[in-house]
Figure 1: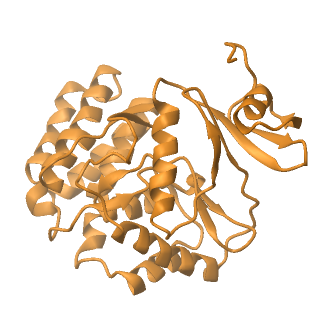
Figure 2 (figure 1 turned 180 degrees about the vertical axis):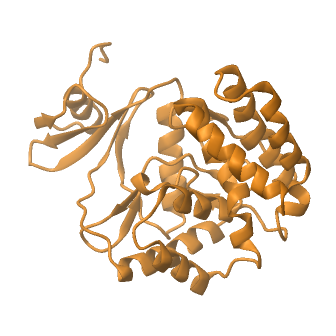
Length: 288
């Protein structure tokens, strides 16, 4: 029976069917919990309705590609999820090259369309604490404008982190996306929130990805987010990716266009500094 004041240890026991030995940070989320045999697991509570279902569906969809490794989901309900804990070590060039190869394979596994949600995942999902709507679009540029740029421009204006007149800068970028987007590509299977904090360098030398906002999109979006927030051994990651699946000419000039989405999400969640950064990137794209 689920109680409103259930803690991570209680949730882990209920969802795995195993007694727990100890919990670290038991009042927070995510929390590390030790099962009765000493196995560590991570327990996470959803911050909004549908958040757990979206994350679990994303983890399973990405894992099904057999490319990048994801922590196994050990149990979940609508409120809590339990996944395996990943032991980590310092990143190195060899692991980064392998990650680049694996990320290319993940993207190449594809998606039914731009904006496609993972199987079993809700249309109304999340990226961090921000709403994320997964609906199909006919082409990447139109879908990206309608569902990944302009909603967060409106949100930033509503929150006062963008001035109303500044929204026009992003609207002009969206109008030019068909020419700025580069050659057409098929929908890729994206992690969707691929900043460095969601890349775990496993102790076995293999990267695990956590906390996805998975959907069908453009593969350059994942790579742009890695570059935006920093990633150890990034040059080796990109080199491995290029060896496995070379990017279309001009991809470096398109990085800013793909970074608009995460920057605007951060502007909604964290304030004016990210809005100013997004404006700089948008104006740079218009100057091309």
